[in-house]
Image (tube, rainbow, N blue to C red; front, side, top):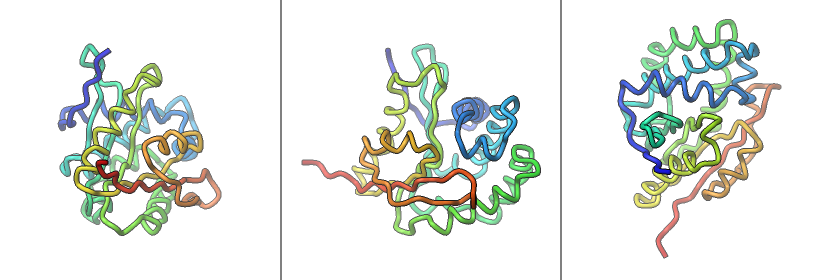
Length: 205
């Protein structure tokens, strides 16, 4: 089996949104925002499409994983140092898509985003905003290839990395790559918790 990881192009965004929308169907945070499982993959896809298109793509940190047939089966959305935050202009550009994704729960999303931003480390770092693979592709190395593609660069640059795990079961997975849990964040104020994780760069021995 051959795994291809390459930078995402703007033409990839609809497929990227679809893949991440399916990947996050059982995610606790996404389930909290979109309780109706019958529409969750489609509306979650709008969320990922919108943020990738308007906030992340132009900074060069978005990559996709392809299978042997060149079909996208996974994606990772990173922000480079200094670009994790959302500007007011970007927020305005994202609003129509986010409103379609979250409907009446959009204010909850805005409040959660503010709480996550308050807790976000200020030290320069690469930020893994989203990563996911299709269910049928899990356990076959696609997620590992996506993470290592960027962490290899982090190590080469001597840059830390940061993420927030929205699934407790994923914390041990990220620990395998050197991430360390730094606490527990109740960004939803009574809904699902989030686990911030930090990774110091590894130096060559």
